[in-house]
Length: 335
Ligand SMILES: O=C(O)CCC(=O)N[C@@H](CCC(=O)O)C(=O)O
Ligand SMILES: [Zn+2]
Image 1 (cartoon, rainbow, N blue to C red):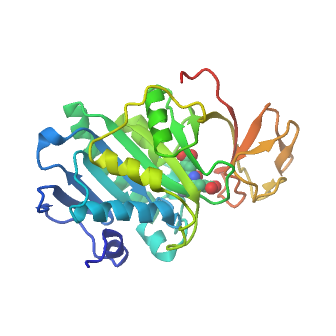
Image 2 (spheres, protein in one colour):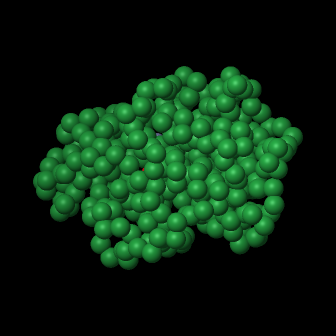
């Protein structure tokens, strides 16, 4: 059996190459290291254009294994392609080393500002942006639906195992219940609306490519080969259908889906920043009113929101970056 696309990528054996055809006619092109594009044989078969990315954080292995499996299914001819599909393995060097990042957190380097310092993750993020722009420019011309699922896992445990972050840029796409209903069909149980600007990959594709884009958290970060306790069957089946051009036309968001919105980002301002709560608290842990969340140099971050919950607590981020999110239930979104 040939080594998988991921195995070849980790071995440094994928690079931009000439396009070729599978025996079933699917067009294949390796666009760059860890980036492969598929297009259906018959352009009339093309239902949508989708970007599936993983490994923007190198140690988040469950989605990396999942995407590698999907790529293998396509290359083996087991999975028929009826969409344009761009598959991205994000931070290849960090994957090799089994770490979140080498120099900088790549998911803080999109939509980059001129002051962002150079480095390998910054260069890779800029290249990924260029790949997405190119990929989606054809979708815009042809009027095809554009989707981007950026697959991650969380550092900590979570009271809700599978959840999505839904960037809703101020001048971008509006909230679409259909997209949330589809995520539910993929096994996602909560969606967190983010309406402030951000430097994440999904925010980039939403803001600059007009894609329905999501960061999707699938359980907890574990080393390669140690994800057997995580059930991704629903997500896998959903993505297989998506690649085959089939998306469920769900009418409404199921009642069990929890909708939240970001109330506040707690940004680390100095080296003195210290969490006052347990840094290993599960995501979605309730935060009673008046809880002291964190402190630094005369600043106290106190919970003043009713029904608040905590997401992504991490005191070890760089100065100027988000050390936690306070979220609250979201009301007023059409289900
Ligand atoms: O568990 C954590 O603290 C981080 C997990 C993770 O990588 N989450 C993403 C979320 C991106 C978003 O807000 O859309 C990240 O922090 O980059
Ligand atoms: Zn991540």
